[in-house]
Image (cartoon, rainbow, N blue to C red; front, side):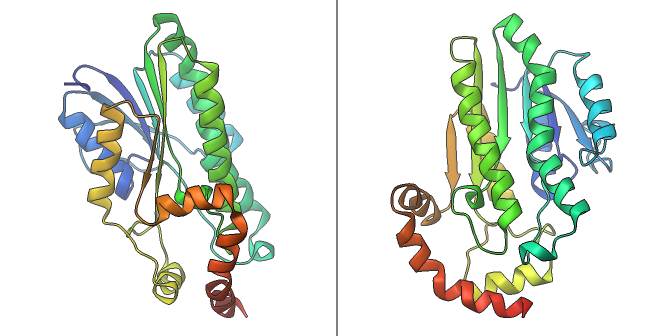
Length: 251
């Protein structure tokens, strides 16, 4: 079994998707430790409380993580702002960038030296389709996830030949409490597909086990990612009508 006996660190492992990922990996023989503000409901995983949204919290958990050797790091934790750019508070903006982008990088810095020394390990970053198709009214969430995607690609090239694999996984929208009532209204207005979290977690775990380089979950979103990379003006036009409709939520 690919996870048997592995030491696995999962951020956001008390959340809807992260919890499912942590439980599944633990159920396949791994020794899983969850990093989160609240303990996971499943006692099969160890728990290390932390706050990834502050400099002090990050410093503490990075120092803690660096004292042990880990086989797999899975960065799941994330927060988002849905609304106009100017309506997001400075505090929430800083926490968004910290949790979605700075924390994964800092934790990689903590665990990577030991992985390189033993020439074995895996870094898994859970991004979002929103990091490749940059949606209006999710500007800072999209920006932070786009940064995570770029970091994953660059890191993969940096550790090539060192025995460390880098996996980037980008789900589309998922039906979890992560989405508030206004986001759900947006999804209904734009007819956006939202996946079941159990199915998404299964795909994530399978991709980790297969040590895949990248996985985009959802069709046609995975196709739109490629189109947006090549001809973004086509996606601009495709989203223009819905963007104007959604703007009315904040008028």
